[in-house]
Image (tube, rainbow, N blue to C red; front, side, top):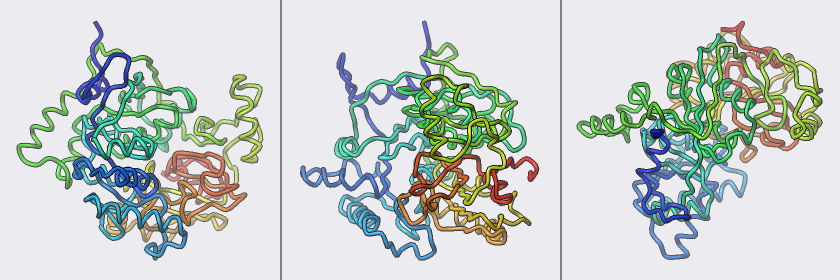
Length: 466
């Protein structure tokens, strides 16, 4: 008889009611809110005369629409301004903890949750944002939901839940210099495709995962959604506990010991069943970079862009359209493609470890004169720490723009946009058409690759700078 995996164990402890042939009534432990997807949910509560279910289980911040310039409190875009004002009003009206500008905790919702110790093993966490999967790095089942479902959770603490399939992804081996967690998850997506994990929750295992810091594990789990997964997670271990301990929302005293005792039970059984298993050896992996208009269309920097004929029939039309849009040629090398912009930030790569990697490469060097480079911390806490470590001075001396916290150039929903016809190498999660600005071109890569490419003005590996 097969044992249970960690995904099954978390699900089973959160089923409130299950009728045969029906979705389960499923309990949600914590809900994260931001300004873009919460307004309609609050409005639905108000229209029905409902209060918020346990306000202490909610946390709100502003990230998507806010400017990242120094005078960010002045929001020129009328829609963005209204979104921010609506969240402020709703948070006050419904008693939600809200992190506004200069709260010392404002930032990208998937950065501040872990920073504050809100994100903990065994929890179920939702947000009106697809990259909620980030929190799975802590052994939590975390996933994005739509606005109407968000309203249900706000009113009841539950949602209707169809049990997902499970996938086991093992990253074996150890990284070479210049290769990072971002490269590993990009390799998985390139390998299985943007629909390869549809309907699954992924558990990531293997020696490469165990050797990762929590910030690296967050990068991996963050991009689970890009291969179609519902969520991705890593079983908790000492690395997890060390990260959480002492943070504001972390258990204290005897409660800490009780929590760790429970967290240690969150392991997949040796004979656990999975619907699918995949093994990727990272020992020979080089830095990855995307060449097309979705995260599946990615290769190692030393490889050539695929020829259309070499692709499966169901990928050919998509590749033709991607190359036509992004103005690249099949069979040509991706290395040394000229760039105009470079960006490090977002819920994928906007944490302090990412900024340290970039600073290490930029120190004593200059961003290429043809490159506009934005470096955006994921939160006020990351901003403060970067300044304490002098990283901001390194960025400024190199000619990069070190900005205030927010989603920034990850998506064209705020002041920060890549102009039409300009090419950006980006430490973000999506390279869709127009994602960073109408008519712009995006190449996904690790922060190290972004930094090295910013120096040279073209796509290059960071290996010689390390």
